[in-house]
Length: 316
Image (tube, rainbow, N blue to C red):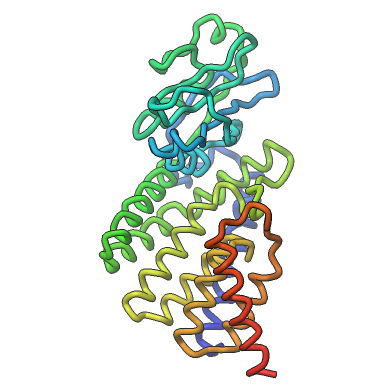
């Protein structure tokens, strides 16, 4: 690896670690500090007896066709401490998706229909509702515990910019996509770390995705940096693409297979065989669920395995 890129990667890792450390220190300081510049949206919710709200997003094929994956991703990205987002089973309301279920009631599970756009924030602001209008059940409101939840505006803005950037990437407007991805990360980076750490503090454990072990609240940033790398690669900016891909891997704690695969691809285009081999070795060290891999994923993994074997022979 070129010295400049190595230093940049180390610097990025240092900044990431420093951000986590600083956020921990800030959590110990007074919350009333006048130096804080973070704007937040305050949400008041009815909590379960355990002091948290649970939302389950139906991810059946019908709801996915209605945009459930986007709803699930946004809820995971912006949900504050005290709110848990889970994957839900089909609830037989096909055609009304995305469906978000709230199993906090003692008697029944509330099912919210067509939860997308502004209704996502309304849902967070009116948890444990009794109907789809977003109004809080007055009886439960009177009896239940109340939580004051905050969602940083920077986090919401950054996430929305990343969604806009993804649209630009799909349209092959690479320069615009890169600009939006950079602004998204710069805007929301600190807030996303703070929210993730607040969630983990509230739960008393690390909150990571089941399949990869990436911090739940940072999944969207891992994807944003990876997509930025893809856009830069399309424009021929391989040095910038490497840094963006390295950033994606670092945020995802080197547990995102797609980011490692993208990094290996960029190194291949640059002709950096040693770095490409290292990226592939890191990729194959990750655990995979072979039983649930698609045929396309199996073929891709086989091709990457052949490529790794070839590099090992050439560099031995």
